[in-house]
Length: 144
View 1 (cartoon, rainbow, N blue to C red):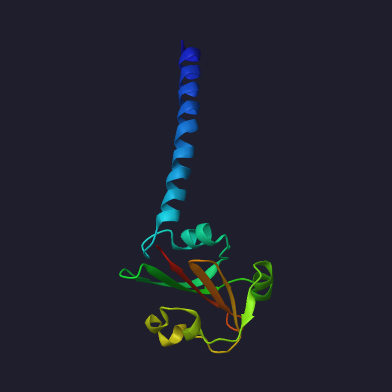
View 2 (view 1 turned 135 degrees about the vertical axis):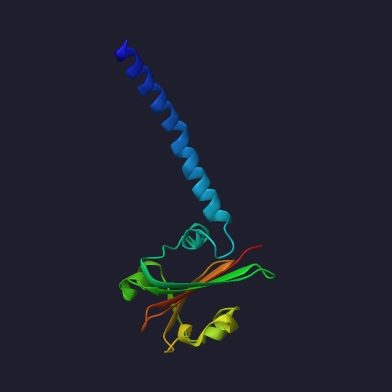
């Protein structure tokens, strides 16, 4: 009798896993794709929309403009900057940060670049800007 119960339990448990695990991953991916403000899944939503990996970071700050549906995050990257720039095909951009991102006015003075060595990569609704010298990265995304 014990053997039958343990077999039944094993079958029920494995059947539950077949449904629970995929449901969990569907929920997380849906939440990451549809997260717009700064409350959850910020890095994941950038990565899902842009296809650009965000490496380990030491500092994060996030701003969300509810009226215009635009989010800006500031990161201090903890990675080899040159390798990261090459892997994702960032391009040197001579423009100033205030010319590159729309939500520039929200940034604190400590979040501004200290050099003119800015590298960018962008898509239709998103833009990444990296300052090579400091490892600061600004990511801005519009949600339409």
